[in-house]
Image (tube, rainbow, N blue to C red; front, top):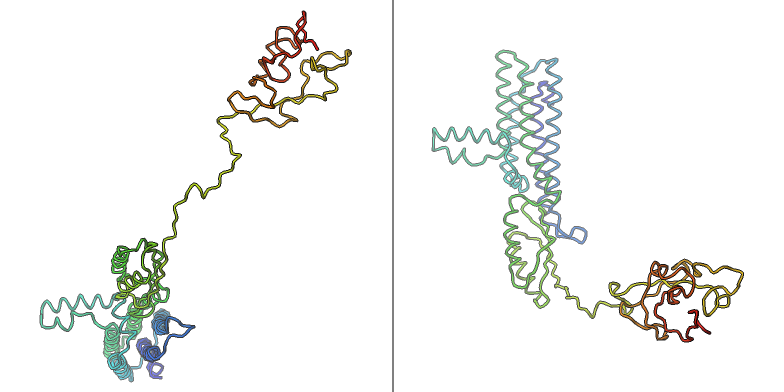
Length: 411
């Protein structure tokens, strides 16, 4: 009501800080409620993430309010309305008192932790530089200005100071545009103060590992990996469960002869100093050296480098061949150059050893003869300077029947 009566957008921006203080009180109540609640089967890790969510929502709403103020201020630059200063200064001091009372009188654990753990805002950095300069002149003020100032108290004081300057300039020179400039300054300070807290609480909600504990965690994991019986530490994951509460899980592989309970106690003792909620899974090494007996070897596997394949020719029916010449019995048909089919077309190949063996029990001492050599032994007519072996691929076959004067086999 006072912001509407004064028509001051700077006072409206400062009132948004009062609304943020109300949300901080609600967050404090949620924090007390979380302390009284115990973990349940549904919320096995407890309810600490509720206060993280409350802080995140409060800071994001404050930033949305700052963006709204920036939009309204941009519109007022085009047409600046008249500002009434009757309640402007009174409203400033009332809001300042309420903000300081809310932030300093109540121990708000979530916001106190976030303000210390989050990165500093640009307002805090500039005030710190100014404090160092003042302490250089007056060293006695170092105990007051050099420590990190509370960002909420700092923004409350800075906003009230901007409103006081606005009131004086409007009262002296009727310079109404300074109200819009003060509103933009308060909105920027609000956004710059709340943004690091939103980022920090958002990372907690995303279950990320806090950057300031990564080095300590690596050191503890190296110590765990050197424990007696521990072979490997893997699948480690650590995250912030709540403000100041770290949770984690890790898998530990141990030797088969190690004591599981002893290793579990040592690992928990090392990590519990930093990780309050810890889950450790111990499993023994189940690696077994493979043996030859465990690999089945087929009896019919042959070393192909010691064997070769002889394709056997496919002969015609035995009743149509002469047992002596293996040529067609009909005198009218001319003796063919080859009386067998294409090798390997109808008969499966036979695998023979490179060593000279005696297959089929015939007592033949033979070897494989290529077909080119068979053709070079004669013109295809029996008895013309070649042993009768060009059809079967066998050479030096002893004649059981003898030969006649013409060199033809005798039945």
